[in-house]
Length: 119
Image 1: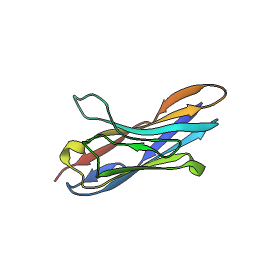
Image 2: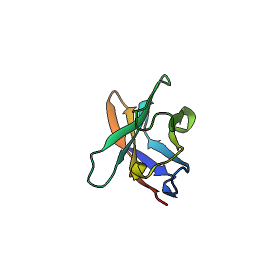
Image 3: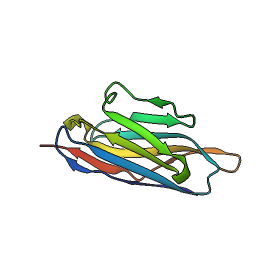
């Protein structure tokens, strides 16, 4: 069993910043890919960033230049630094890890953390 615990969400004004964290616990051999997704009310869940085991990153155009994903392998933790936040960034943010355990690769999700950008 692998569990992901998120923290760092909250209320921020447009143009402000937040830093999200997601830490994994359990029986883990390695974490292959770490990613962040978000889902706003009435909208589909969308990818906002991911980082591979080799450190390669991906961002969609909607957040490129504003968001930065990073990882601390020693702590099994991924971070999402969000700058220049906009009202359209308001959503529940979920972390997702692709994990290799005992001869099996599986995906795990965090519980979600609310990010609200409003004046």
